[in-house]
Length: 329
Image (cartoon, rainbow, N blue to C red; front, side, top):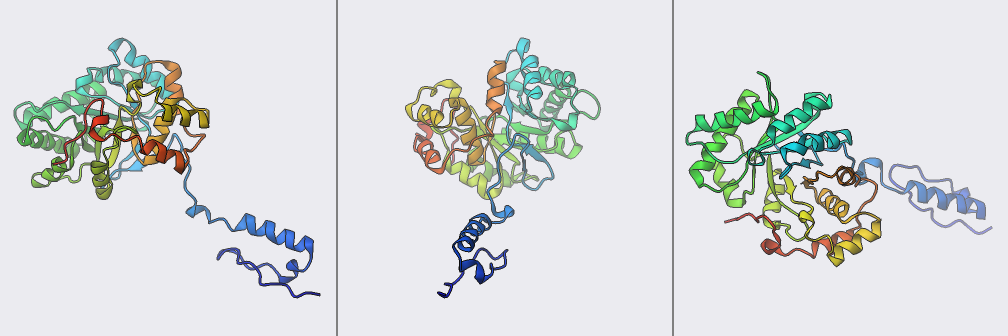
């Protein structure tokens, strides 16, 4: 009888199979099957599958943010409540509004009508501009909180500075106001939007809370803003992606259409999934009930590394922005 050859090493988590298993065709077949089954890395080493209930931890905070948000920009008062209710009904637990959108009250109404607990829905708003003094700016923020979550204990989960425009003093005034909101529990986390590297570095001069918990910027395959994304990742700042669907302006792009066909998904679903796999928090917006549902149906497929590269290669830098790319100087 021929001597059995050296046995395969299965994994450090399994004992070697008896050598006798290698001496008959049946035994060798069993050993091969066993090896194939048990040579995979343990569960904690496997890449985690994404889910609608996924959360991300904010830097230096106990707060966690849902990885998929629902945007309400240009959602008029007459339909905003219905759109938010439909989103909440279909599993969204994160709604993004702003003073500029003029629908903070409607977002609050939707939450109340949904029957969901306040702590189960993550609500974001943004201050558009400083009011002339830290106290006046703080009061402007409090007014937003009151619209969204009326009552003495009302709060928002995330309050952002909408834009760095206005100059350093205005940025400082708004951040100081947000820090007071945070201290008083009227905001659970605070952050920025459309800030570049220089703007966030500048905050070190006056911020008690640094880094900002979030930076919300325009992101999609044609505008990947790699410099600010790398900076945020380095400092643990959560990156939110607004206009992830490019406002349907790229719906017929050949590369995007081809990738969508590969997975049997819509182009919008591919763009949202792309953001999730990049580690961003996408904020897709729609007032069409069927599209609201479709935009959350992105967890039964995974874009391959090859197709992610195809989408990455579409990057046009700042020229690819449809709203604005940040200034990093």
